[in-house]
Image 1 (tube, rainbow, N blue to C red):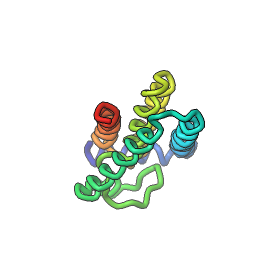
Image 2 (image 1 turned 45 degrees about the vertical axis):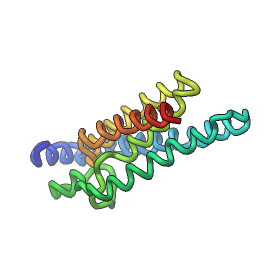
Image 3 (image 1 turned 30 degrees about the vertical axis):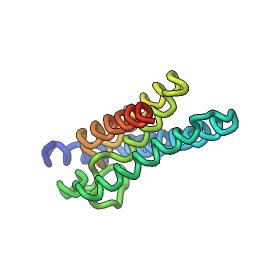
Image 4 (image 1 turned 90 degrees about the vertical axis):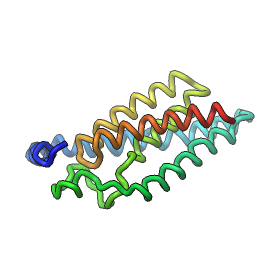
Length: 164
C-alpha cells in the first residue's frame, strides 16, 4: 500500500463518522464474541470431562506466546506509523504489527473449536475474516499482517492438534 492510498482511505473514513463508529463497534463486538466464546468452550469441555481438555488450552496458549515473541522481534511498524496518518481505529501501540495478533487469535481459537465442533469452528473463522478486513480498513494492519495472522493461527492449530 502506498501512503497516498492509505491517506485517501483515512480521509474518506474520517469524512464519514458513522462508518468509523460502525467499524469500531464491529471491531469490538467481533473481538468480544470470539474471546467470550473461547472460555465458554473451555468450560464446556471441562464440565463434560473431555480427556483432551488440556490440549484445548495449551495449543492456543503456547501459540499465542510464540507469536507474541515473534512480533516483539520483528517489530514491524503499523500503517499509521509508516505513513504518519492517524488510523480510523484507535490504537496507541507502536510497532508489533506483524502478524496481527487479533486475527491470529481468532483463527487459533477457531481451529481449536473446529476439532470438536466443525460448524462452530467454521463460523468463528468467518468472523475472523470479517475482523481481518475491519482491521485493514480501519488502518491498524496491512493485508500481509492479517493474512499471515490467519495462516499462522490455522497452522498452529494443525500442528498443535496433529502433534499432541
